[in-house]
Image: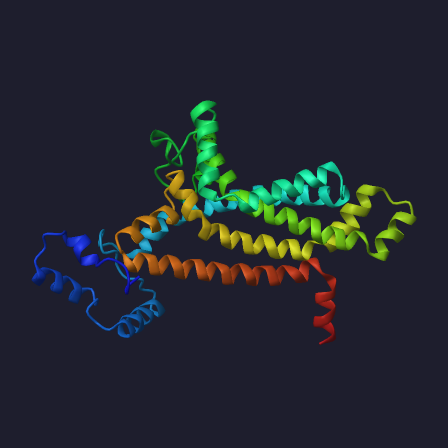
Length: 312
């Protein structure tokens, strides 16, 4: 962005700013230094916990992001819960009913979910459920008069903890459409992975043995098959959660959701480099942390991981 984006000095100071003012502003922000020097200065500041200041609000980037990060996390958590529950259910059902009408419909729906652009799905949902049916709001997080004044920034949690159920349901209504939109792609991926993993397990010898012993279908599928098929599913869910945090940019823009996604779009359009760099860094850290958590979950889900540790 520092190479190809419009000069932020012209955006901040305006088109009628003098050359002298532009050079003074660029010098004060370190933009006249070579790119390599700018990068080294930025990394040095990051290691000291300093992400710089926004060019436009002149406030610390950390404060700007902390004010918006709860909205993005809240939306992503709702989306991944929705995607995991529905995706796993459809994937298991599709594997059990292999080559049936249910399987074909599920896989067709998953293909559509993978192929459909997020912003287009969001606009369709707004037209249908907000424009025609008037079931849900078309944007925002909560009605202005119901917004909690103090709290964590997670509106669903804040309104529930103080017992304001009217505000809680209002916030939930605002979150449903963006959560469904954001969950669409992940739901399709989880469905396909669950089906594939379950089909591999259902053909194993110990599944045939369990059925030969007279165990019920629910016990065979739930206790024996699904638990052993869970590792690749957990991996996909963890990676998809990281993707939701970064993919929320389009969803937040369509639904005017005040998170770091929509804020990033604003900063990209006005070349606010410190904010964009901090957002990219945060997303990268989240991906790393989610991969670590998935690896740690393996020990709880797969006894063979514990056995290998004990033998080592």
